[in-house]
Image (cartoon, rainbow over all chains, first blue to last red; front, side):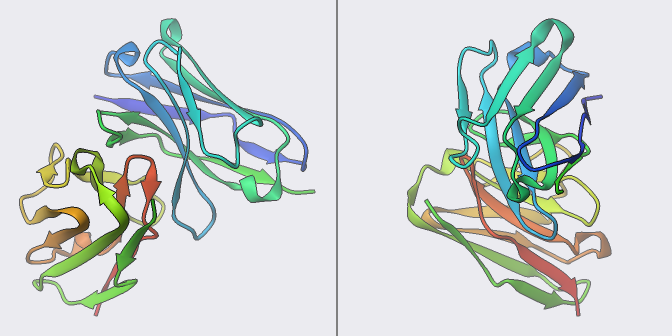
Length: 118
Length: 103
């Protein structure tokens, strides 16, 4: 059974940092592009970042570029999102998601809430 | 690319059929087009990929169609568990969602 289990969210002050983790199981993690998608409270879905199978390529949504870094450790079947210089509008539920191909996200984690507030 | 979903809310009764629309601001590669369902407190679930292919385990009452700038999701014979929010997606862009609610 494919599973994506996230951790690392919480409350952080504006300007602070947080690192999200996503541990995968039930599939060959190193064979898939992986993604982070977020959802602000009561709002729609917003793609945040993507990373290639071997970690050599990363892509970011414009508002997080330069502040967020996506990475992975295929030996640990783990995906990460390092978030720096956090702002109030980064407050959201953050999901990790597997890309089955052509940006169709077929498995999602349970979501991890990040709240940026003083 | 902007994806505009309509209507914003669809009020229907179980057993009825629903047609959800997603219009793009420019011509899309349909290989990158997908639909998702999201219920309250749950992660999104992939329904349709490649514009018309059903994802694993998705009932055949869900169907997707379209090309170019106009895409649609049809749900035949709505079941109680189908009342949810539906999002279209092209590449990394999502539409704003359509809520299918019980009338």
